[in-house]
Image (cartoon, rainbow, N blue to C red; front, side, top):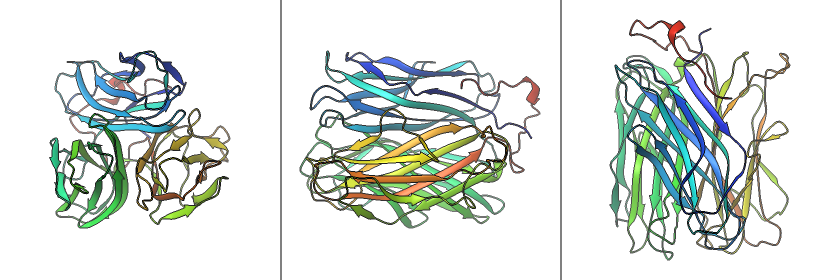
Length: 407
């Protein structure tokens, strides 16, 4: 088996920041392969520690240049509120690649007020080329006041052969009013899904969004879109709308499960929403896997907190900051929050323990009112080994490549 070329680092430790000057939390350094594109994906958690109204500014910066690749400002909520930070970018291929460093940087929105960032993971994954390879597009920054969905990023491609794909869509969303919301969704060849309803109280508060879908595509043309719209008399803003289609035949193995139906609870104890089955999802070979998890969360009261967690067997994968979500708008029934976990998972030490079970639980916090709402959950595992459909090409010698940096 040949390792699918990747570089990975984790910064799971919760780190405190009391300055409005950005500082590095976790960085990934690697040298891309000659003539190959590289997908960069990251996730983490941001926490307001000290005072209501304090936010967390973050960015993923490519130090060559330097060039800003992802950025946001979240968490102007109450003390101890936690929201995800996440993003994706594809670096173009180069015939003369140089060493690259991607740093996840963070700061408080106000000097002397404490915030924390934790659970950071960054992966750089080499992409395959050609019609049956991995596909990518980025849309331009845009805005609209329309109440009808507008197209932002559009990915159209034509595989030569039937194959399975994992579609990953990301964007950063903002509006400038607390009286109305904005919405974003992934259009799956005319069938919309993962519709998320964002409401921010500051035009500088850019919230991350991610959607994941596994689909089988025939030979011929296929189109996926990121679409967005405004609700009420406000302006919806979108930037860095990106769609990546990973050809799953380029991985030696993959597992995927999803649940796309709304569930609610008023319980202050965690209630199960999703549990994977061992026959459908798990680690079945003695190699590491890339885990990609997304969830949609909402709540019925802006004065309350709602929580969810992802468990791998008995391991809470949000090890430092379980997600505590507080909606800015009250009484809604839609999804108002996009939770994301990117993580490299090791093959278990016990070779007989091939399979893993994943569960997603949710609740409203003690003393809260209103419904906790959950929907649009997907869990994907990609074995970090080249599959039969991954064409290395370009006459490269694997023995000269730099493999897996970091934990």
